[in-house]
Image (cartoon, rainbow, N blue to C red; front, side):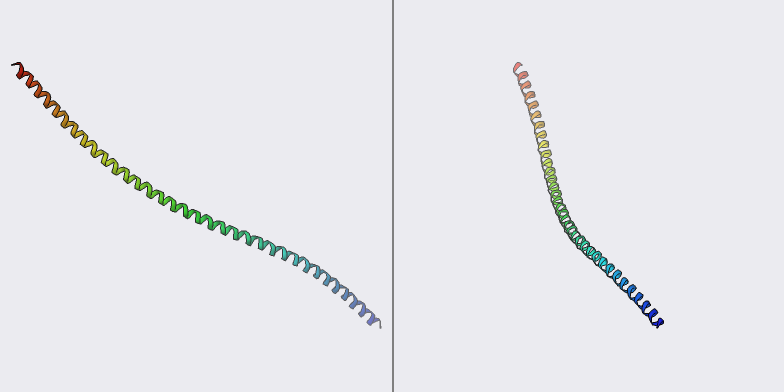
Length: 126
């Protein structure tokens, strides 16, 4: 009988230990569930931030492409204006050469006229 009592006492202690272990595991499970909920919430927050950053990166990429396109267009316009300026400079150079040639002809005619007038003056004196 003593043996049965001892066995009952051992079983009761084991039951109490099992009960305590069950309570500990239940508390640990509750804490783990709370941590999991926090991790899931953090994951959602980070996912939203990543989505926002992806959108911002795409917008920045689009803006960069637009700026490159505008830059290319401006470079084309600058090159076009430079070609036009060079064309006008060539035309100006041509006109200046023509003016110089005509001035030279005019100066020669003026000198010839002066020579004729001098000759007439000399002829008129004789």
